[in-house]
Amino acid sequence: MPKHLIQRWLPDQEALKTHKHLKMFGSLLLDNNLWHLNRRSASAAVGVGLFMAWIPVPFQMLLATGGAIACRANLPLAVALCWVANPVTMPPMFYGAYKLGCLLLGSPSQDIDIEFSWHWLSSVFETVAPPLLLGALVLACVSALCGYLATRLLWRLSVVRRWRQRWRALA
Image (tube, rainbow, N blue to C red; front, side):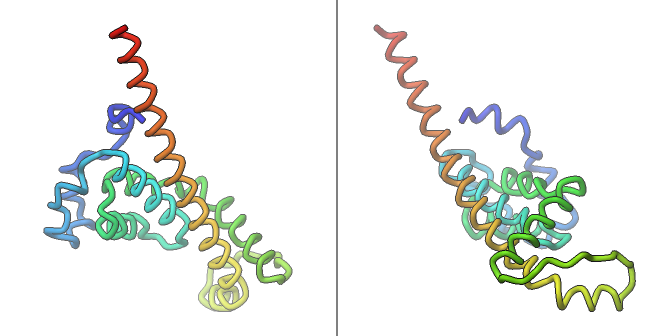
């Protein structure tokens, strides 16, 4: 996969280093390997970003940053990909995760009337959380693995195609 195509969409390195919530990682953000873009770092970042996109918490960018640091993946790409889960895509993603969790647990899915109160939230958490979290974990693992493998494969195919073009140009 061409570096220039990916780099065009990535957040700026300085903007991420000075982001108010990412400052908590301090000197860990200074590791140059987090900012290099190659096949290994890009595929690991895709895996980390897609995994964190399925975690049903509001601070996915922090989790993606921690995952990128732990895996030595490209930090901007991991942070950008956690935004696959955004306010528009979250409801269908987590509804699908809930349905998958119900299927895996063998429990019937429930119709939920949304009411914004602590009582409602605590009662729903007991019944909805187990299938939602199980489904999200399964989908996180599957999407991270598929994204990782697809990135490795597409990057390799791009390199082979460029090699062949060079050989043809020399012949």
